[in-house]
Image 1 (cartoon, chains in turn purple, green):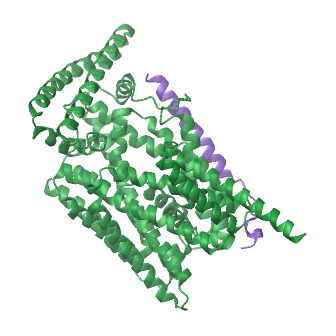
Image 2 (image 1 turned 90 degrees about the horizontal axis):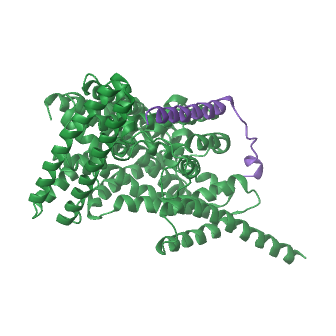
Image 3 (image 1 turned 180 degrees about the vertical axis):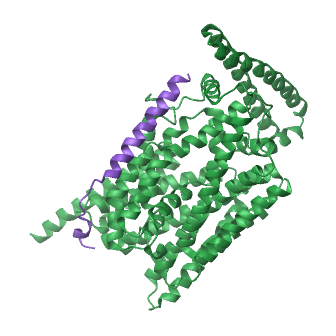
Length: 38
Length: 567
C-alpha cells in the first residue's frame, strides 16, 4: 500500500455530533437520577 | 424446570440454528463467507457488533454487579462512543478502501508480511482462549444452579454455534445475532416489568428508585480522581476509550462485523448505532439488577447465591455455624422488610424527618446484612478454599429460577444461551478467517482456487470450534482461568493497538522498525507483568505507548544511519 492510500481526509459527519450530544444527555440524565434519589 | 420452559428454550435455540443455516445456504466464495458478500445493512451491523460484545456473562454478571455494588459500572463504557467516532473516521475508510478481509491484512500492505503474521498469531492465542471461556462461563453457572452436566452443556452450546457458523460464515453470524438480540432485549424487558409488578403494591417505580438510592445503589457517577476506585468517570473516559478502540478497531471478531457492510457509510452507521445504544443498554441491564435488589428488600434471599458454595460449607464441620448465620440473616430480612414499609409510608406522607429516620434504619440493616454476607464468604472459604465465594454471577440466575413464572424462566435461559452463542459465533468466525487467510493462504506457496480456500476457512472454523469446546471442558481445572484470559488479553492488546496506530498516524515508520519494536514491547510487557510493575489493566495503555515510542526511535536511528551511509 502506498502512503497515499492512508492519506484519508478525516471527515466529520452529522451523526458523530448526534453520538456526542445524546451520550452527553445520557450522562446528564444519570446525574439527575443520582441526585434526585440520594 | 417445567415443560413449557423446556419447549420455549429448545424451540428458540433450534429456530436460531435452523434459521442461520437456511438463510445463508450456498456460500460459493470466500468473499461471501468472510465478508457476507458486502451487502449487510447498517442496523444488522449495529446489532451484530452489540451481540458480539454482549456475552452470556454480561447478562448473568452485570445485574449481580448492580445488586452488590450499584450502577457505577456503567462508567466503564463512557469512552466507547468516542472510540466509535475514531473508528468511523479513521479505521473504516481505510479498511474499506483496501477491501481487506481481515484487519491484519492491512498491516502487510502498510508494513510487511511478518508484522501481519505476528499480529494474527497474537490474536489467535488471545481469542482462541477466550472463545473457550465464552462457552465455559455460562455453563459453569447454569450447571451449578440447574444441576446440568457441565461438559454436556459445553458441548451443546459449542455444537449449536459450530453448525450455523461453519455453514454460513459471517452472514450466518449476522442474521442469527439479529434474532438473538431481539430475544435478549424482549427477555430483559419482560424480566424488568415482571419485577416491578412483583414489588408490594405501594412501591412504585419512583419509590423503588428512592429505596435503591437510600442503599447507595444509584451512585452512577463518580468524578473523583481516586485510583483505588476502579470505575470512575475519568477512568471510563480514558481507559474505556483505549480498550474500546483496541477491541472494536483491531479485534477481528468485531472488525469482521462491520467489514460486511454494503458501503463505508453502512459500516459507519452500524458503529454509530452501537455508540448511541451501548450506554443505555448497559444502564438498563444494571437497572434490572438494582430492581432485583429492591425486590429482595421484600422477599427472602439466600446468604450466598452460589448453591455450590453453600453446599461446600454445609458438607463441612462449619455447617452448624453457617446455619446460625442463616438464622440471623432471616431475622435481619424481617427487620428490613418492616423498615422498608416504614420508609415507603414516610415517603407517601412526605414527612422529611420520618424519611430520614427510616432511611438511616435501612442503611444500618443493609450494612449488617453485608457484613453477614462477608462473614458467610469467609466461612465458605474456610470450609473449601477452592470454592467460588463471590456470588455476584449467581444473583440474577437465582432470581430467575426462583421467582419468575413458568415460561419466562425458559425465555430468560434462552436469553443467556443466545448471548453465549452470539459471542462465540463471532469469535469462531474470526478465528477461522484469520487462520485461513492471514496464515494458511498467505504462506501457502501452491496456487489454489477459490473453492479450496472456502473449504479451508470452513475447516479452520470447525477446528477452532472443537478447540473452544476442549478449552471449556478443561477450564475448571484452572482456578483463575477467566482472570488469566483477561491478563493475556491485556498483555497483547496494547501492543496490537499501538501497531495499528503506527500504521494510521505515523507515516514515516516502516515495517522493520515496527516488527522489532513489537517484539521488544511484547518481551517488556511480559517481564513487566511477571515483575508486577502495574495492575494488568494498565498493560494495555503501557504496551500501546511503548511500541509507538520504540518504533519511532528505531526508525529514526535507521534513517540517520542510512543518511550517514549515503554520505
